[in-house]
Amino acid sequence: MQSSKRKRRIVEIYFILYLAALVFILPDSSFKPGGRNGNDVLGDFESAFTLIPEKSALVCNVIVEPNGYRITKIDSSNVIFYTGDFEDIQFEFTIEEQATNRTVTLRPDKNYSAKYFRVVEIPEKKAAIFYWRPQYLENFNSTYLVKVVATAKSKKAFGGKFPEKFTYKATTQFSLLIVLMNALTGEQTIASGTPQKTNLPLAPKEQQPLQLPTGFGIGKILLSATSPTISQIAYQQWTNTIVGTNINLATDAKVELNVRREPENNGGTAQITQITPEFVVVAGRTPSFGKLMVEVKARRKFDGQEFSTSFTVTPQQIEKPEFPEYVYPGQTINVDPKFPLIQGELKTIIRDGDRICSSSLGGAELTYTPSLSDTGKRLSLERYVNNNLFGQSYTIYVLNFPLPKIVDIVRTSPTTIEIVTQAFGMMNRERNEIVQLELDGNVAEKYLDLRGKLQDLPGSPPSRKQFFQVKPRDPNKPFVFNVVAIDKYGRRSAPRRVVAD
Image (cartoon, rainbow, N blue to C red):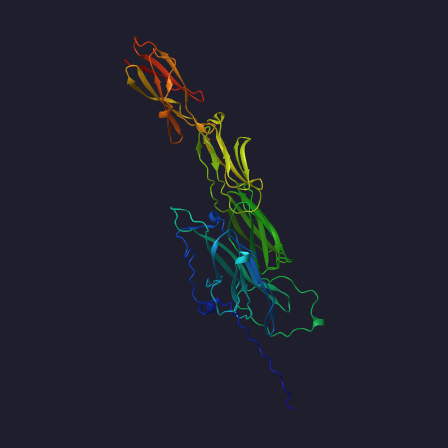
């Protein structure tokens, strides 16, 4: 009797993540950052429009079985939040196959036929959600990098100089990782190329070893940082993912973190926050200036092989506060701190050495009026986030007012002369002016202040022009005298000799 045998059927499963095919399935993107918006495009910091991903990597665990592959666990979605009060938000997600540099682009407002990637925008939550579902596996690649670009329009026009609304642009990125797990040995590795299927039968459960061997094989260790450079607002939190190949980072490796700050006092920090078999998550605080160099080193326990990778963290260029660089005593300083939209206790101060002249909290405008005693000083303007210096310290110079001066002498009649003076600056928020004429010679002690002719002149510093009428004390003698003008600060002009005859 011929026995019937059931033929083993090899299930061929196709992984549509092969991005070369997707390029033909999905339509070309027509997304152009800034399209249909204003002519000016501003970067993340300048607009306070930033993107914040919920996760730095989405991991898919795949079991390698005798008859194929099976997904056992997957992080299938990532939420991308955006900050700021904007409108007409436009997202673009570009998925890049790291091994071949092939890319495919998705937008929330397009209906694609592919089911393996999907993007949905949630305006009420100020977010977009990225979905992936690699249900069919054929071609494996080490990593996929998803780059996210978003643009937005401001809700505020900027007058005649900028008649169109600004367009703001922000970017972020995260990784897609495929982790292979051998059903027989329990070994795991980041997928790299197409693994060979095995025809070995599965061992009965009672014969399977209780302790599965660990480690990702005996090949060369590789570590790679998802982001080789990170640019973030000073003192804000950052994260980066370090992916390992041929090493179990959680159990069979010694992972070390080396941090170097340049300069040492820039306030940057870094620490390992998560270690899994396939990747390490490093997080910290962005330095206020300079840069932070972070090195992650892994040593495999069974053979001592080491490998390291590094990345840098630098503060994103921050907007300079708005303030006058040169002021005069009595002239009020108005400072707009220009803080970005960040969390924490915000403070702005003007200091003279250890003395705090003025301060404001929460990003509010700061004002200060230097007194005459501040003349010649260099005041410091500083911004703080959680009592840490934010950006650099700026200098405000308090200049000395020019001395008052006698501008002109005008003879209006044989017995009258007009003395024209000019005083500079402010005092108690009012114009400085000449309060006394010091007269010596054949001139009457009493003089007339012609207030109706007074002129306030703009400029830096502002000034006031005044007119005074004087007469001779003895009309029968030559009309000759000396005059000095004295302002509110008690400052004296250069003496002027007047010969009217």
